[in-house]
Image (tube, rainbow, N blue to C red; front, side, top):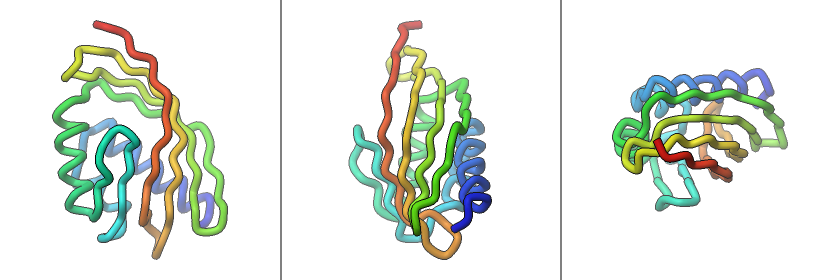
Length: 124
């Protein structure tokens, strides 16, 4: 995968997050992709990613802002760094997040995602 192709997929990821669009997010993942958020069970397969997005993003987040900082390509892996900010509606907090994500790739899509992040939580 080229850096340009990876950037396009990450931009779709950011747009899907900001617009809370579970249909758009699954377009960037292979059918058997894994989505590993360190604070949640691993989601295996596109259907599980879709359900996770509905539960977590639509169900618990609002006023989402995404800013891509850097992308690196290492063979079939994409490493992306971004900042995000959102309202956690479940816990009534403003979340500021700095994240690094490692994506596996196959056939022009992401076949896996592992997230590593640090958050600052501010009560509303």
